[in-house]
Every structure is written in structure tokens, then in C-alpha cells.
Amino acid sequence: MVRLPKLNTQFLSKKHQCLFLLNLCGSMEQMRQIQAQIHLSGLYQDTHTLSELVYFCSLSPSKNLRHARALVHHGATSSPISWNILIRGYAASDSPLEAFWVFRKMRERGAMPNKLTFPFLIKSCAAASALGEGKQVHADAFKCGLDSDVYVGNNLINFYGCCKRIVDARKVFDEMPDRTVVSWNSVITACVESLWLGEGIEYFFRMWGCGFEPDETSMVLLLSVCAELGYLSLGRWAHSQLVLRGMVLSVQLGTALVDMYGKSGALGYARFVFERMEKKNVWTWSAMILGLAQHGFAKEALALFAMMSSNNNHDICPNYVTYLGVLCACSHAGMVDEGYQYFHDMECVHGIKPLMMHYGVMVDVFGRAGLLEEAYEFIQRMPIEPDPVVWRTLLSACTVHDVHDHAGIGERVRKRLLRMEPRRGGNLVIVANMYAEVGMWEKAANVRRVMRDGGMKKMAGESCVDLGGSMHRFFAGYDPCPDLTPVYYLLHGLNLHLKMVY
Image (cartoon, rainbow, N blue to C red; front, side, top):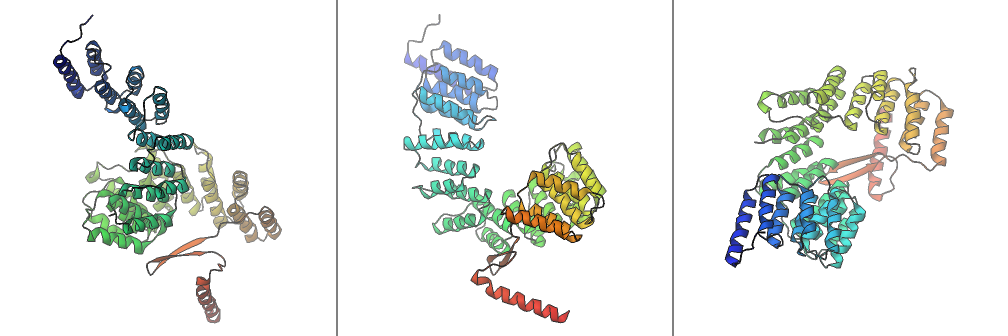
């Protein structure tokens, strides 16, 4: 049996020696040798030494969370430090929800959580979209009086945003006694990711009004909102602020600008920013390719893809968004063979497994070219169950290229789509219009009667117009909003004028 050191100086010397070796440790095998020395030296119950062991097993490149968990469970310390490190390790792992069960064990063992416990615990629940567990953690933070901590609050906002509980995220934000730029960015992110885009813009300008300087993340978020809305004037204003404030055009900011200008149709500005960026990543190239493809510049999009794939950019490999843009370009240009080849290369050359959106675009490639049989066979061969969007894409192509349904594909697709979404008004409208186009008025009326009796309505078409720095939304059909009365008068006058001319 090894005698414990008698002198305190010897004890400290051995402890520091073990900690020094842990800092140099590069594998679990080496760590186990050091752990054996710690046991022999009687240092196993030392809080700091135990926490360093747990840190290596939880957060180092050679981490082993199972071993870290065993260390904590067999330790006799009631300090929360080791527990917090283990929770942090699980938060960054492929099994984030394990952190919740570690927390429960921590409470059973009498270790008191502190303000460093909850941020990573909440982050774990966010990563797993575990709403129930996250709410329990929120309640525990409240009981411990730590829910008002700014880092806890920031993570709660992010958690509720990940779970699409925007009302709860905004409530946490509104009740925070102290906020940082991260707090504002968190609530803006929650709004943007759940498509509460107007609210996202509102929070951005509230942040500005409260004296907080927007950082790079804030500006990227604002530009992403502008991209989704096609809000070009606000996007240009954001760009001007970047220039006026001398912000460095990072890859993230540059990509956000290219995406915003590309989606807003300002392809000249998008190309201007793209060509002046010193560094580009795959997302930058993909944003430019997709912007060109979506606005009909198929040849330019494919030329840019070829440039990206050249030897000069050997360190940049295409991703799923890149190929979405490439396939979209082929669809708009009617390049069926090329589109099929790109679709093949995506998986066989670059190892990118096609997502539902890629299958949908390929159906559109065939459909736009009038190759309805090929599109139907392509869907039948899909390795995943096609979603309603894929079937709806083919049905829309049938209404254009085979309105009389000579091939019988339209009827097969119609039945399949209505089985999947029997109460979606948009599907029934397409079917009713197909019947009406060929003079089958009774069938068309029956479909519309089903819609009326079932209380089903097609969502109104919506357009947004950026005018004078403000976004104006217009819906199909009559809108009784008083502000639109002059617009309807103008449209009525234009209709009369066109009738007189023609």
C-alpha cells in the first residue's frame, strides 16, 4: 500500500505534477495512466483534480463521455464544477439530451446548480428540440433564482426559438432585466427562423433605438430578412451602414449581401459584391449561382458553377444548395439531359445525397419540358416517399402540357395528391381548374362544392412591392383596406383604358 505524502508541500507538488501531465495528455490511454497516479497519490477526491480529469474526458479531442460520467458519479465531491463540465460535454455531443439526465443525477447527489449549469443544459434541450425537458429546466432555473441571469436568458430565448415557441421566446426577452447584443440577436434569430420577419425587423430597430450597436450577426440577420422579403431598399440601407461604419466584409457578411441582392433580383449588385470579395466559401458561390438561376440566367449560373469546380477553386466543393441552383438553372433553360447528368453527379461524384427539394426540381425539369411520363417514372423510382409538393409540381405540369389528360397521368397524380392532402384547398383548386379547362363543368362544380361544404379555402396569392422604402403587401381578390381604395380606382381605370384600346 502506497503511503500518502506527509508534507503539504509534497502533496501540492504531486498534484501540480499530475495537472501538468494532464495538460500534455493526448489520448485516453495516457489519461488512464495519469488517473492511476492520481488514485495512488490520494488526489481522487480533490475537486480541482477531478474537474480537470472530467474536462479532458468531456471536451478534449480524445473525449470519452462515458468515462467522464463514471468519474463524476464515483466522485464524492458536491461541487457543481465537474457536473457542469459533463453537462457541457453532452451539450456538444450527438446525444445532447443526456445532459438533462446528468442534471437530474446532480440534484439527487445534492450538488447545487449555479449560473454556469443552466446555459449548457438549456443548449442541450435546444439541440434536441426537447420542449418538455427544457420547460422543466426553465422552472428549475426560476426556483434557483437564476432565470434573470443574462446568459441563462439568452439560451432560453434560443431554446424556445428552436422549438418554434416564438411567443415564449419573446416573453423571456421582454422580461429580461439586463440585455446584451447577444440577447437582441437571439430574439431576432428566433423570429427570422420561424418566419416572423416583420417582427425580426422591428426588434432590429428597437435594438438600435436602445443604444446597442448591431454587430456582424445582427447585420447578417437583417440581410437574411431582406432576402426573404425581397426588401431591396432596406437591404441597400443595411449595405450602406456596413460601409459607413467601416465593417470588414467578412465571408458571412459578403455571402448575406450576395444572397439578399440575388433574391431581390438586383443581380448586378450581387455580382459586384461577389467579385470584390477576397475570400469566398461554398455558400457564397451557391448564393450567386442560385440567384442567377432563379432569375432566368441559366447559362451564367452554369458557367459560374463550372468556374467554381475548376482547379483554381479545388478547395471548394459544391453542397446541396449549389446543386439546387444548378438544377434550377437546367429547369429554366429546358436542359433535361444536362439536368439529369448533374443530378447523377451530385451523389455519384460529390457524395451529396439528394433531398426532397432536389427531387422536386428534377420533376420540374421534366415537367417544364413536357416529359410527363418521364417525370412520373422518376417519382416512382424515388428512394424516399415523395411529398405533396413533388406531386403538385407534376400535376401543375399536367395542366399545362396535357390538359385533356390523354396519358392518364393527371388523373393518377390527382388521386394520389388528394389522398395525401384531402383538405388542402389549393389542390382542389388545381383539380377544379383542370376540369373547367376541358369543359367538364359538372365535375368542376362538384369539386368546388366539396370545398365550400368542407369550409376549405385556397390561401390567397400574395405579392410584396418595395416602394419608397416601405413594403406593401397585396393579396389576390378584393381587400377592404381603406389605404388600397386609390389603388383599386387606378386598376379600374387601367382596365377601362385597355378595353377601349383593344
